[in-house]
Image (cartoon, rainbow, N blue to C red; front, side, top):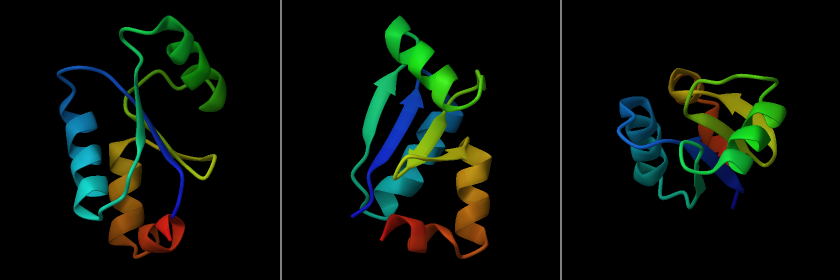
Length: 84
């Protein structure tokens, strides 16, 4: 199973939507709240090339991007292969 990391924050509808897709696919993921943890925010910025929007999603260390990027991969039929 893939290692999935989601950098998110509270009251973020895009975070909720992205996590819902991962949950629908029965994928376990590690989540970090970057609004409450400065070290995780800095880690997210470094890993994502400075992208500040949330969520920022990584699958097996590969930067996927945000919610729209995750759904685009799913719509293109490429997400399941990354998650397996």
